[in-house]
Amino acid sequence: MLIARSVADLRQALAPYRRPAFVPTMGNLHDGHIALVRQARPLGDVTVTSIFVNRLQFLPHEDFDSYPRTWESDCAQLQGAGCDVLFAPREADLYPEPQTFKVHPDPRLADMLEGHFRPGFFVGVSTVVMKLFACVLGATGGTAVFGKKDYQQLMVIRHMVQQFALPIEIVAGETHRAADGLALSSRNCYLGLQERQEAVALSQALQQLAQRWRHDPAPGAEQAAAWEKQALDALRSRGWQPDYLTVRRRADLTAPSPQDMPGALVALGAARLGATRLIDNLEF
Ligand code: PAF
Image (cartoon, rainbow, N blue to C red; front, top):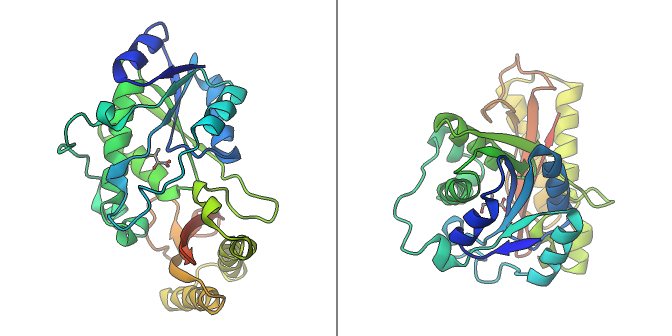
């Protein structure tokens, strides 16, 4: 695996190739990331992964400084997964000057849910992904693989690619889960032993919410709100601080209307357990 630390080195490494398949990450890789790399491999003539902890997508009180940097383990896992090129730019390479030119996603998609609780998050994500796309796929176009675990992020990136007519195909990867059902996440390593046992309650809450819709499809807005409140209260009573637990249309993440039946919906949730904020979702 070739490691490119600068944009110039990356471009040189990719010059012989016509269609890279790309998996952007912030490192601290787990089996979910590695599955995305394996999924990407047959989709291009060279497989590229990036590791870059993007300051722009963290709020001042968030964990940018303490975000786990696990270089040796990340490299070993990528090597084992058959990644050809690892792009790991230093901050000074990707942001040689303050990044004042930013990509602002459609607020109708980006200001709800994650964007509501983490203002500016999707501006930071869209800006770095646009820049990573320019570095990795700018010369050729190609394919990029994003996990469904970050469901809203995937939708924002798809919309960006469509609106800017980027010659990039976005492919979605399924969420990987631990044996008990907890979605794999780089932030799971923050959980203490007891918190780790409790953490599965978030995905269970989403399953229960989806189950109510399956039993009683097309509830009115009032009924849907009552179910969501019950789900939030249940998590609170277990010691969580939930931001949201909600059912939305898969197509645009707006609230479902009675015509939107299971099969077109997704339950999404974000909640804090101790100091760790977890997110998850379930298509149904
Ligand atoms: O999902 C992530 O790890 C990040 O948001 C991404 C897409 C690599 C941008 O920094």
